[in-house]
Length: 130
Image (cartoon, rainbow, N blue to C red; front, side, top):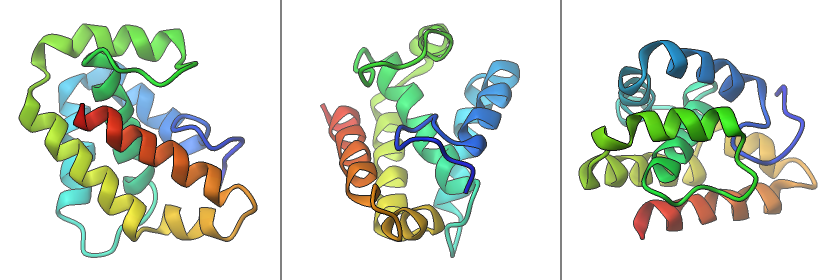
């Protein structure tokens, strides 16, 4: 896992996904959620991308995580008019699924920072609920 921190964008997969978001906007978000919704086994990068998409949605709804990068905040603001309560609900369900059982969750659980990662994802679930 190419990760340097527990935040949603502190890994190679989510950073790569941002490039897709820059190019495709809402299509990238829809694809990230659909990948989790349609998967039998959640593997990387789909699980990391779903968390990244959830963070963008939360930011677009005015509930960004503290310290979110300016470029991602700008991307979230650009799509905010396309965000719906249904999309936030789909993102929340996708993130909860990643948290419950995914390759990413298993990898984090094997590290000393697993609890910190889980707390950050739990916080995202709350921000997608509010």
